[in-house]
Image (cartoon, rainbow, N blue to C red; front, side, top):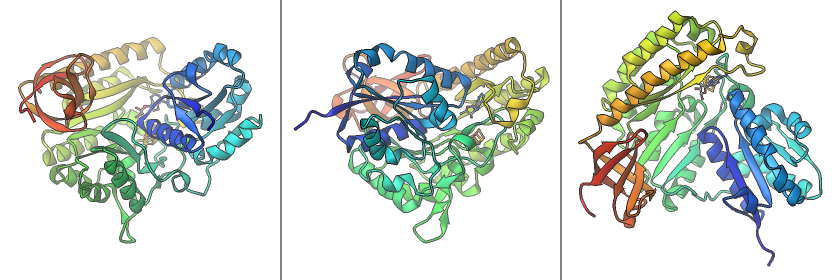
Length: 443
Ligand code: 5AD
Ligand code: SF4
């Protein structure tokens, strides 16, 4: 028997890329590749890339450049670039980086086995089609969970919203939802392999409208409810959502579906209606705030998170103040804020940018407000008993680490037998990005 070839995968960007990386590793696994943890040990290196902001794409190029000594020492080393930079810059990557053998977009990686045959013949391959066929149908059917008791499951891809700053509609293409039957099968399969929590993924996940089991079309709420019927699956999350697709039945599910966890990532991007309009968001600050009130009425203990862009073209101090006001009014348990980055090919890239120093300063102000809210949410957990799904041993001897229903990282002392299990934990302290607790009942 020949020794297995070694594959090293590095994932940049969002959770959808994490999912895609797992699926690519599975596909290459069927071709005799075994995953390793370091680039040094690999016969093939796969970068799954992110194009959402300029920094993300630059990071990929600099990490790629750093592979040169490794490639010089091992000329047979194969280097592949996948994901959104591959989709957006295809040919350019092959031109800029002669070491690269293969460039594959997010919609064609099911063709990796054939592509690898060409690479093994010494060809350089580029495949960034948006094919008619569904890649998921062609991928290995058995999922191999690689991250313990939690897993991602892509239910929807692409976006038709065309926010004026965003590359996603161009790199991931139009919105496509996978049929419910396949998703339920994949979920059941994950559960038989020890998964207890599934996060349903999509660039615009709450726009899900896949074929249902009853021939009709299902929305996300129906899919969540059906997933909730799977024995052994204890927790369901979904991300990322658009405010305009938060339909009534999904809001209701937050109140009456016990397995749907009380954490919601619902980006608003800005608190200024002028900027929201320029972003083509098609909602206002007020409509967002009213929406949050409705969701909180259904699930009062919900922890909210969001995304914000500062320094969008045309943003004035008053516009920025409106963002701070919105954050103050909503109260986030966590939130991500980014400095606007012009993406080639998007409508906003044509517009005059805000002075970089001004944007930096606004980003800092917003981040300190968000950090204060995050800290307050975490401190509010002290004394409360949360349910923790233990995912891995903690950093200290005898410690376990997992996530509460509110998606807080929680550490506590406990027996290894609890790995993969859910147990009640009383929170006793908070660090900047995690909570410490103690088990309330020994199993
Ligand atoms: N510049 C800065 N941030 C961006 N995002 C998307 N596109 C850009 C851009 N061009 C942010 C948005 C989005 C998150 C995933 O990344 O806040 O919700
Ligand atoms: Fe991008 Fe999200 Fe807007 Fe779609 S909804 S264009 S993915 S920011």
